[in-house]
Image (cartoon, rainbow, N blue to C red; front, side, top):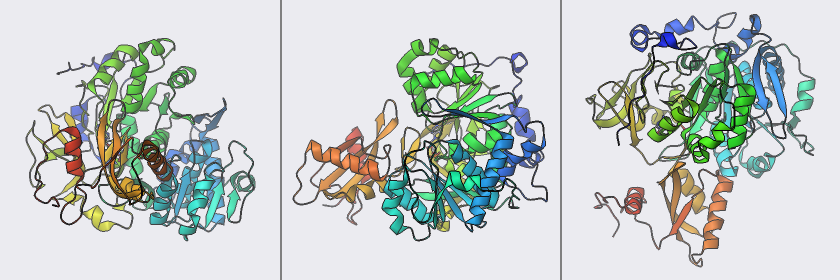
Length: 582
Ligand code: AMP
């Protein structure tokens, strides 16, 4: 079905003048170097994203402006000015210094969305160490893989999550210190090598000399999933702030007076690029909620804090749609002026629905962990074609490339979505996996791993992944990681994992397993296997469905044929099966 284009009014009539006023003109003239002029750089030269996000505002009239509004569990609320964030992150940086943290060390966070998570992240950057945010819903295996691969030296966590850390600590010889944030005052006594955040902060100096990082020094790493192997750490540099700042300004259209809410968790790249750095580099007040998706609470938050710009994800939007317009009407959402979505394809129905119920359409944009910032977007001043991710950001050249990566394909043809590199916020390596990193670049193009097509007006349309990676509610899940967890279950002999379509979460994981001798198929066993994976990885990665087979289809070299499992599951042509084991 073809959806009608949503046409935009003349920007002269907008209540707030959009930062990106004329797409074509900006595309023509855009230079990343010009964005540098809008940043302050460190007093003695150097570029540090913590300074650009927080400290530079303490030198101007934003000093006493609220940087962070925190909506906590049990009706808690806290507010922090840019000055508060600067001071507290200085204190935290001093704690890290006292532990011997040096530039380039990896310091990881494993916390719920409490203010201390944000303070820690800014503090880590100030020391010149590399930030590694872990999603607090991760289980034991997920945190072990990431902490071990990165060689993290310090971990900041909470008493509630400590049991998971304790379970894997013996496999992490490089992890020297654990800092415990006890936000909700639960009974807890520190063990050896555990530092009580609250106590350490009380004794920490409030002044700190920010490490004079170069724009090419590493700043942050996020683990992301691929088809093969365990998740890999996409490492970014301090120059990434140039991309965060520019896209928060020109895509999310942030203005100084905005109250902005990004619903993503900092365990994922959206939660740091657009839940920390980009908006704060623009001096904007951000709302953070500790509480996950709850339809009433979300609408209450928008109305209570008069949120003006909202950045969320398709799964959440589809859940809001499920509750319908009735719920929207119970709240005063008149503060909203601009709404955006990312993480998975935003279905056209969701775009149309949002226009009807909120009086404005969600603007979809596309990017990924490796790109560090938004690359393709819908803009306030541009018409929206529902179902399209929009057009490339002015400093970005995107194209659809053939299978050999030698040629740009004409409008209308499907192919590999590629980007001309470099750009400031692109990742600079996969941690310890330089060859894998290099394999993502060919003939001047960065290969995104997505398939797409471009129409004759330069709008990009997502087609699917070029690999086996699944997208569950906006979170990439690597089949290998799930299969590895599955075969650790005592009953599972072999496992093959695919993504199957889901009306709300886009995809869910389906696992095919064969059982070891002595185990019989049963519903109880399937439940047990699901729980096992959820505890090791996280709920998104846990199979929603498990099918028990006698054997799994394999190539003659013994590789499980996920492609065939998927084709059979979805009733698609099986393709070439000549390599199939007899
Ligand atoms: P991640 O690296 O976890 O942020 O995931 C990035 C991947 O999510 C992309 O490569 C796409 O496959 C998918 N993705 C992100 N945004 C969109 C979007 N707007 N439309 C379609 N897919 C998207």
